[in-house]
Image 1 (cartoon, one colour):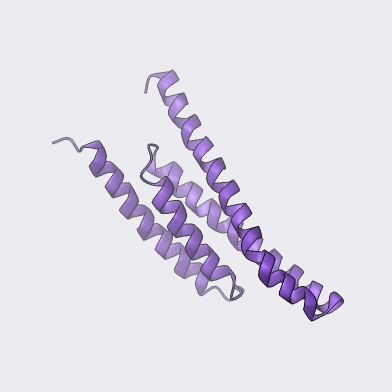
Image 2 (tube, one colour; image 1 turned 60 degrees about the horizontal axis):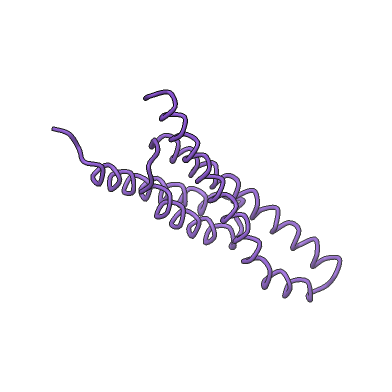
Length: 134
């Protein structure tokens, strides 16, 4: 009994949501996670899984990209957190207001950039499969 393409996409989507949820919880309860990292990683996981996992491509590639995105997001948010505290210490509380306004935009930049790179990786893997005849 052969599984249809829609069934595979649904299974990939469900698997991605499961993996995204697990990774979100791991990073949320990690000792060095600040208050801003966990919600951004949860938003990233939801967007990434809902937009990438239904597309064509191997589950291994999609899962690897999801985990790599979480690691990049974790380090990005921790670096942003450290820079914000340094800015507040040297420039005063006005920098904190600036950080609160600009931090979501900076997070949007890395999320969109990583999403577009992921689409390129999935498209290249599909092209290579077609060229090799697999």
